Length: 301
Image (tube, rainbow, N blue to C red):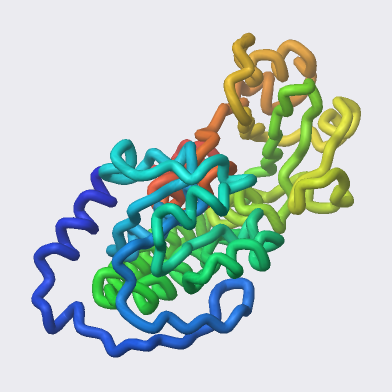
């Protein structure tokens, strides 16, 4: 991921001036449907989440400030920190005198009023599904005037998805369960309308939790009991662990708790990357998607 972002920045630096030229002001609708006008090419961009900054850099943009955990882009350590992504500080954002704020549609849409009141154009991007990745990249290319770089990145993302779909097209879908382990010991399953649920479908999986009703506070997920997990009896279990639990492997714990599951017996319980598949939905999934396909279909080359 880091290498790809660095190459995107290099491509931006080496593009001829004519390729970067774009007429401003630009008026468009962001991914949550807000009409936004950007009067001039932004020079002081503040991003408010890890996904927002990674989408911006994939599009060829550069930020001056980031949220606390957004460290996955070149030069992040030198950027101003505007606080936790769940509660970015208006005061710290204002201190950067931004001429554009890029926010996260997945969990910051409710902040549109407060962020919009800071005076800079506010653009929402994000990925609730894989297809939102190229769409957000193209949008940001228009906003920051890097349409050629953004289009190349968007096309690459679409090509990666198409390649994975083609690779699993003639294979039997793998019955899959995505478990998210909470710090309080609860287990949730990803539904089809979650980001990881969408990726599982693309990668040749059949989500055995698709018919479980959503509950709890996180859209696209449902809290379940061990009995419900047993009833699904998947062929593959993908485990995502938010935060550092400091304890034993959650995948191993699932095996100990539920040894009767066919996924456990076949040694097909896999812990997958937190940031790629849950915490920072965005450009990393371009590389994560074929990894997921290989876990679901080890017969792939």
